[in-house]
Length: 454
Image (tube, rainbow, N blue to C red; front, side, top):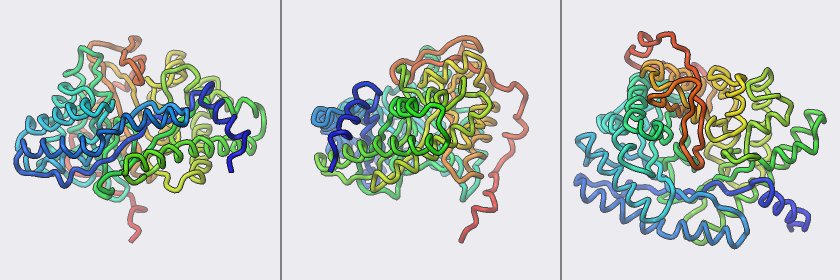
């Protein structure tokens, strides 16, 4: 039984501490839509998404009213389009046709983003993979709601450096194609190592081939709730600090489990996972950075930051995993710059650098996220940064990602404006020394020795 005290606590979290269900994401397999005729393929995709997700937005809104819990975003993820379009697409423009169909369908059903314009190339690339990857700049410039991701490495297979080199070029071209809007296309593009098949968060969501025909995945978030809880134990021991985070994460995740099960019942689609990530927004009081400050740091980036983030991430997972039958996705603490006002403040104060953010990604849930860099940053430098981040994920057997935004026409000291949940970001300096001879080598970086476990 849920006590009156627990109900009142949850109400407090929702009303005053920014607790919300960040997203209900319906994962949809498009494998049965495959056709060698591009027109038929697009018709099949449209029909299946509308049939399954036509009531997704209305259902999310109804659940929000029923339980009094804000359901902020309703989204869709689909099978990686490099697989779905392989039989029909012979050119980059053929893949762009699919992207435009996905965008039209997303608008028709009313979701704010659709993820899965993706390729999984950790060990090598097919012809279709290469075509899709090179089509990304045009696809993201021509669409509003389509998100793209490419998985270029894994602990089991190593890092495909040919794909890393291509993605440095793709990010540059995506930035140039959307330069009139501060290169916002790059905000919808993620490069992964060890990408999960069930991530509900954009821009990296796709519906893996190991998944069911359709599932409901929920991402729940409450950085403000955690910060408020920690205010009550200010100055206490690490034991009390950790227990407080665990208990709070449990309560947050129970909200996500409740919403996920209800959405599953109403839509007739199986429940997949709850992603219990602490995902910040630009709103004041909804910041992972502020949690780190409450733990005892003047700003994120100060000495002790990586240890504090490791503590936070681990306790969130320990508390949340007991609250749901199925925890998945990324699950932990996100450290995007543009989407977290506290991180922006730390950059502006000169405390948080790109190198420190890279160190923090060793212990957080994702990676270098929503970071604006000078528009004249070379493709090879971007590839080098991607390779560094992929290596962290590969060696540490964790998901890491890169979402860099080279803002064309702007440099260090200026600011990029993205709007909405994407926020704004100060342009951060990048190491200017050359790595082109490294990233131009062909082939793969081998998997680490501990990957061999058969």
